[in-house]
Amino acid sequence: MSESRESLRGTFDAAADLYDAARPSYPDELFDDLVELSQLEPGARLLEIGCATGKATRPLLERGFAVVCVEMGAALAARAGRNLAGFPFELHVAPFETWHADPGAFDLVYAATAWHWIDPALRYRKAHRLLRPGGHLAFWSARHAFPPGFDPFFAEIQEVYDALGESRNDEWPPPPPEQMPDDAEEIPSGLFNDVQVRRYVWETQYTAAEYVALLSTFSGHIAMSAAKREHLYREIRSRIARRPDLRVRRHWHSILHVARRKP
Image (cartoon, rainbow, N blue to C red; front, side, top):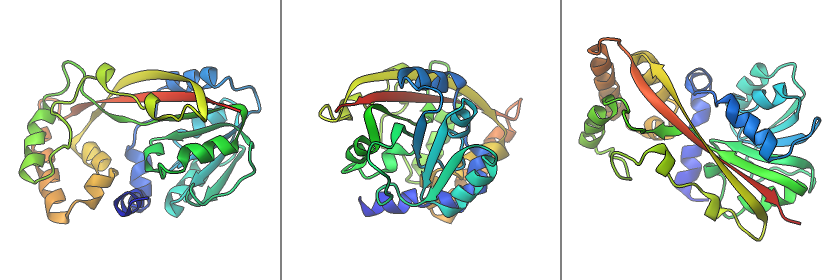
């Protein structure tokens, strides 16, 4: 794994409580589709990679499944333990890359907004090994969406990012959610087949304080220099304070990938 990937993925643990409060929940429809596409039966055993504070764990525990969570951040894991108390789950504090379990132990291996942090050289091979024959792998993220009519605040604040030397690496504005590429082609056909993809878009409104709190859970903003970050947050607060409703509308989108383990 690259040094930059390793250092960035370790930033979230320092903001565990903020992460729990500010990060969005995923749509119920996503979990319903996940259960259906993965053909999960009552009592199925699931492995979640990078559970953070349990935002993608609780909905599956509530649906009656047993979940084993692997989370490398001790503070995030502690928060997950408190959030999920009373449910049938196991929690292991370790990087997925070095964590061990019996081969074929799980009906589903999944990751929510964590799959891209796992070492690309081994993530599919290890998931394949941990799944029973016919079991499923699933992963998705929650990303900023820019559908038609997205809030013009984001075009305005992008000018501040550009002035700070923190421009986006991709095109601006990004394509609408339905045109965003999925990662189906990345899934190794020698290990998995029957790849299925579903898309979800939803909207959340934020006050200035809530939006700054959200940004403070993103690795790029956490790693930003203090001077740049404070200038950016000052601009965000000022611009939202001048809006009639004192809020900003942010759209989210997730692309759910589900693939069946080949024998």
